[in-house]
Length: 311
Image (cartoon, rainbow, N blue to C red; front, side, top):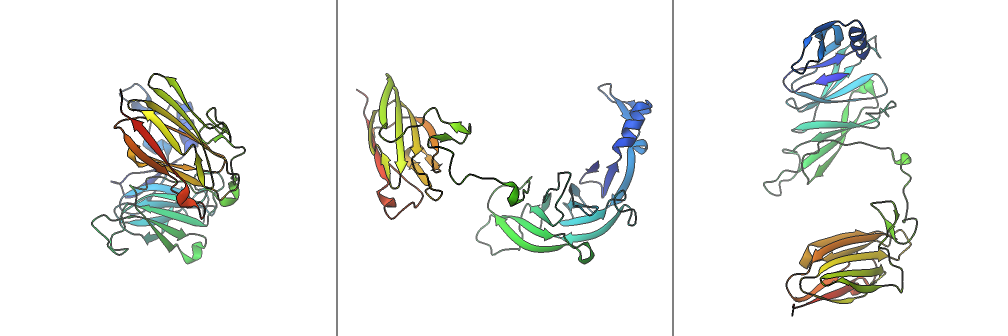
């Protein structure tokens, strides 16, 4: 078990078997504030390796090496696991500079029993001086590192800037492990429940139902390149429950649905049913439209919502 903290330049390796043996022998140092027994540090320790400033997150490969991000050094440390590589022992092998400021790491299968050992990704918090400046905000930056040839050392082979918040944690899954669907198993599928949706609607069953004095259910279909119904009238103050089912069955027939007046923007994959709701506010006529270029008639894939003033 590897423990690292930003204020200690070492990674500390604890031996789980030693911890279990100390517990079995009731060999404790003291009790903590909650009354739990505390095993002595030296009785649990396997090794300490000085890797650099600000060690944070550790991943592993299939060759007996560990990789630790160094927050303050802005680098990745490769160090040998003495239990796996007795010829090297527990020691630092290499430090590779990355762009300021590294946080977590992700390795192919690095958290599994059978890591891949080919690539490592540095999840860096900023990309200072790495890319052309387009404004005050610096992008986050992921760096792909080749770790497949220990004798040649680690090498940064690609960068990928990202315009999102701190890349704190990630998993890498080999593509051959993914058994994805080109389309959903049947028309009217819920991506949330992974089952047929209770609000799905098929062709010819589209409708607008008033289910209460101030409640409306809209059952709509989408197909290249048309929404049905394409004109809907409701009353001011109605609570609207809107259900859209894509009737398309081919993998490239992805549609979008945007109703900007109510901050609605959705993706609708082939065969999927999506749901959203809102309370109709200011009277008027508002457009909705498909946001994915789905065919030559894409611009025809639009409609209008009319909200009548309350009497």
